[in-house]
Length: 111
Length: 115
Image 1 (cartoon, rainbow over the protein chains, first blue to last red):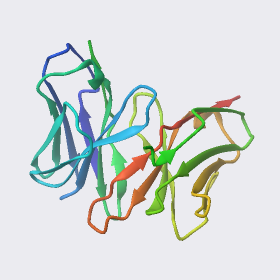
Image 2: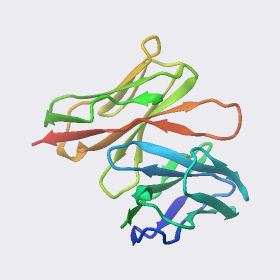
Image 3: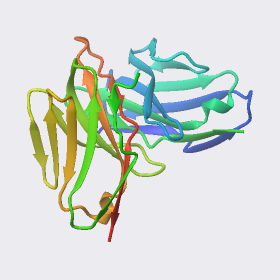
Image 4: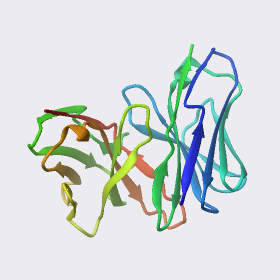
């Protein structure tokens, strides 16, 4: 079966510190992968998506970056966190026939 | 510019009654619509979807209605149960002709079903 793992579940980081959130999927190959963010009082905003290894598309200009070093691994990073980076980050994958599945999310609080 | 709008941030209904969650969209290129349910500190889970070629899709207690001329869709839950209490997101897909499958989400509606 297809599963998606996201970690850590919660993270508290000081302003200016780096960030690395990891997402991995199992049971599938060559999925489309996505990073979404839900900020307080807002909906789900698409940040990045990837249709393959090394292929990253950014949806909104921001302080974050994404990488896909392996087929089933998607990483969200920042060199220096801002207060406005706080939010609930969700990884998702899509594959025809299986639909669109979200991970359990990471609650990031920048202090 | 928000292309998918859920104008009601919250909705409260009595157990056993009908819950109606509304969603409006502005992009006429959207061809597929989905509803997701989200509990706190969890990822959204898929609930029900509808293609733009249909006007109704039903799955158990959940029915989604689509009015393309009004660019409006709604999710009906009948009967509502306390376990339905969650945030409901409306999402839409625009067919870009490629293999990508980006979804545009609304801000969500918090449904509270009171026992």
